[in-house]
Image 1: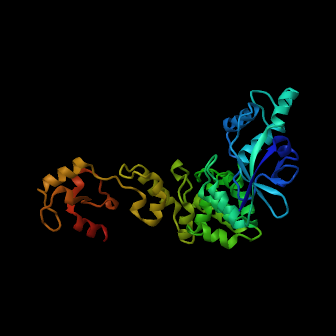
Image 2: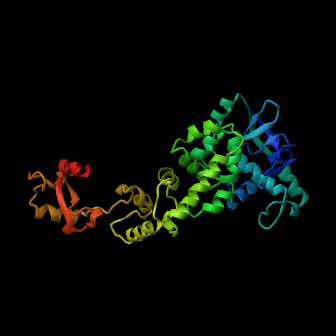
Image 3: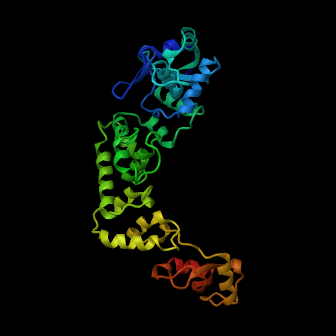
Length: 360
């Protein structure tokens, strides 16, 4: 890959700057694609954005940026998007610094900013080299998420349409399901979660198969179906529902007849059960009956010792003596039959017998 270091003035970079959904984000007289499809949305907070402008005004050096040369002699920002947009937005009057917009500055101050030289590496190479280099130099600024890296590999018409639904501030997915979803839309958390749902965790496979499809209608309709199903099956919203992998439950149970009234009764009961330490797991448990989702409260060391002494170190199953470290605590009356995690309901089994019992 060919790499060349150049100095480019802010005046040249901000010339022709345009930032909108239809045309994308461009600058450098229309020859620079500031936000390629594989790049993240603008995520700088005000303090980070302002720090960039302060650095320029004081003529301090900014970290080097990377542009990639395309076959048509245009360029795209490989690294430095956040800093570039901060500078362009300020010069074009989109925000103020210390209550002063760019147009409020004295002519001399404006010229200092416009004449500031950005240090930019110009890179040339094939598509694979560009993406490999993109991953390598992604150390300045905020680290890319796994999904942002996937976006770099599987960029195309499908991804562009999917991001419209899942990757924008106040996007449709956020508006209808923010109460159920964790993470940030602009950091691609929603998109990653939903792709994982629709293809049962095989995110790369799904993106590869759909990369060049004209739209993302399938996944958008799927997502809406999941949300509607959740609202029907669990009509009473609780904060514990946020972040539950409802898509995976939908995949397994969408065609099964479920009694939402009975489900709500059981959810309420489990929410009050002090032995259930992971309340968000209740939603998966009431459908799957797998106790692993609940993280049932374990016996304390004191309760274990009390049961061990009561049994004189004898395993109640095989009737052999063991040291306490060789034994494990077990519910006499199983939790699912109403047994509580109390000293009276604790018995000590040797590890072998406990595992045999747990496997039944």
